[in-house]
Image (cartoon, rainbow, N blue to C red; front, side):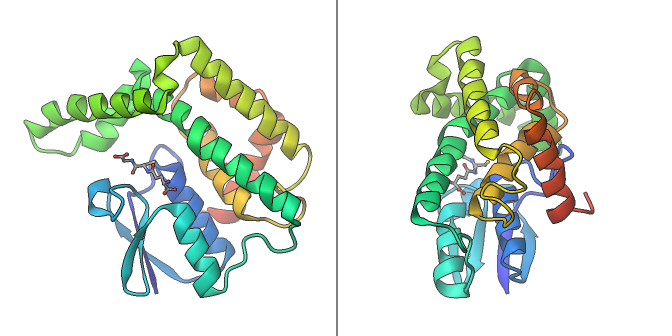
Amino acid sequence: MIKLFQPPPAFNAANASPFCIKLEVLLKMAKLPYQITIEGDPSKGPTRKIPFVELDGKLIGDSGLIQNLLESKHGADFHENLSDEQKAISLAFTRLIEEHLYWVLVYSRWMEDENWQVIKSAFFGQLPIPLRWLLPNIIKKQVLKNMVGHGIARHDRSAIYQMAGENLTAIASFLGDKTYAFGDQASALDATLYGLLSSIIDADMNSELKTAALYHDNLVNYTSRMREEFFPKL
Ligand SMILES: N[C@@H](CCC(=O)N[C@@H](CS)C(=O)NCC(=O)O)C(=O)O
């Protein structure tokens, strides 16, 4: 049985982390049995990030690497019936979502004052005092440092949301009126896309990022269809 380590559901979404939502959707798509162990501390994982799994007796981090192992060792096929060209498009959109759009989500959650209050109480609200007072600002500084390292936080607010808007328009144009990213069959890209869209659209936090996503009816409808299919009890 695959052991999935991730934090509990949060913010009216299946998880606070889009990568955890993605991995759970992949496991559901592949119909592989798994058991969730609640773990909110990324430093417990082998890459010091969540999600991670215990698979074949080993701890493995990174949703993409885990996806590859599920394919190579557990019979999953997340690209069934896709051409090489479609697989290339899938990888390119995955990188757009995870290596760029994701960072705007992080910015919108940690740097917008109203959302920061929500994050602070969800992630640190249960800690004993004085950790509850001290840790939030220490971690926020680290998150900001990561965003500067990535490059996104070197831009001003309006440029950041403008870039995210371009990403979302590209995704919306690509999805068009298809049921899933590549037509009638769900694939790996749907897990990635839903993970991030749910984090933006379902999560009860507001920002210009959310406004930009809500502008695209097909993204909103896609997100609620995917939620209904993969997390009907949410
Ligand atoms: N490439 C990783 C990214 C995972 C990731 O960034 N997880 C975030 C939560 S959404 C995390 O653990 N951040 C903690 C940190 O960076 O210290 C994956 O696909 O799993």
